[in-house]
Length: 433
Image 1: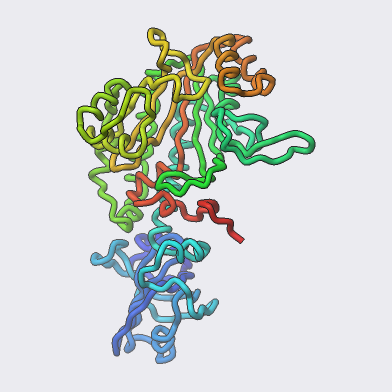
Image 2 (image 1 turned 180 degrees about the vertical axis):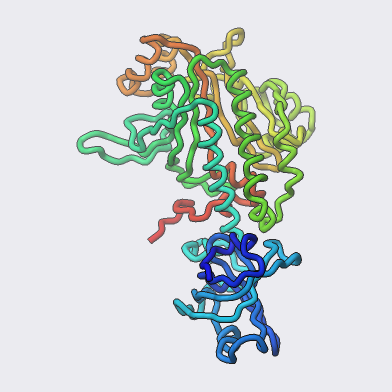
């Protein structure tokens, strides 16, 4: 008799197997008990028929408590009524670890309660499905960039300066020097691109702001590619291929997870159609003004959630908004060739209210221009001499972008709030003991 995982049930139909499981829920009648089981790979149902098992096995099936761990032995059958498609008819149960008074019962619980028990909330179906999608996006990211000829490049987590030129940094001391938790790996990735052509970083980033908005986290993971000898339009083409690749990979490999989440797979499929629309910041402002829904919106303002939602939903597709005002963008972006007030950049906005999922730009290559921008931003010029060296020694046109993993997971899963798409959110203005 083989020991298997639930996910492998399709390969063992009408075979007797052994599976290590936890009980998530149960119901029973006089002659049959239905056990909802999970093992970390999937969820399915175990059926215990009173007349087909020893009396003590049926009594155990009726009495076993939620989240008790056990081994079950039985025969796999197809089950067309379930999302999973298979079930096990159990003939024997061996308890491994008992569970009493499990706090997260099958009823509805408030978010605060679930956050306080998130070490256990991980076991729920929704968190399981979110994790499956997150895992697939991570896997597909490495696959995509490997196929595109990129090298994985690791940026430091402790840095000596602010890549974005802001004060929202976690400060610490690195022996006798000031240091900060990384806000972005981008500047270091630019050094990598000047050495290896095409690189991408994938690591944690931090924002020292107590944001309680729908979209923001204090800690999140960023994918930040950087490409030498690449202008902005080529970068946009790469970005949309990347997003479509991730969406298709989730559709191909996470069908069960998407079903558990109730996600509209046809809608996701629509997001794989390329190219994505492109509009200028100027056109976006006019579109918003003409809608009559954004009184007081003036040229030069940054877009918030309502504006981004309107723009993306207008196209029912992810949409690139290109060439924003220089005044609202970071110092390192390339100035527009014909407009002093613009930089060559783009944000990719996701529909359904999820907003910006990618921010990117062509990078400025003139050392004197960058030095002036660094000074204008009030940054310490000494901290950026190494960055200016990238322009002094063989500078080339280059572009890059950043994608927040959690924001992407939230959009693909269709979750209402970003924290619901993160299996174990360590931050979110709470400190875990």
